[in-house]
Image: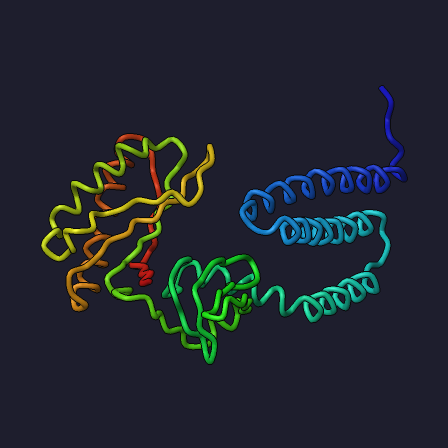
Length: 262
């Protein structure tokens, strides 16, 4: 049986580390694509490249250590490059991060008329970087998402206070029609607080073999019903998910009530 000389083991470890790094980089790229598949393709591609760079930098540092080479200087260079990248990408990263929070907590949706600072218009698009408004003069205004999150937003849409939305994430194996039917039955207990002209509405935001993202929209009768309805809706949602769990499937709900007035 062929025995590898002890002097060659560092080289073997180096090669194995590089191979493992390549596999992890490929998996990281797929994961980033899956998480950002609904974002702008250019932003997704940039995030994939950034993820690959990070994985390869870590892999190269570990591989070089296997050769017994000091990596102090290499680590300093990597740290400087990382700091420079963060400074250079601060604005895009800030806007991209704000997009997540506006999705969850923003007081408006596409189609609403809003005022942000001295700008007002109809929301026609919310992308990874900006919220696009159409003004009364038919002008397009692109507001950075960070500004939308940072400044007070006034929703000028009539009766916007009525609408409550609750995000729901379900595993791909869930029977969506059955789940929605169970939820409608559970919500019957709070129907006296809801505007009967607008029944509960489920909207599918995205769907894949692994999971489905839904939004439950409710319309309350009075402003003072908002908090009780929101709390009760989350309670009923939890009960339905417990029954779903007992049948062998499980979804996720926000750990705290999430309100999306629009």
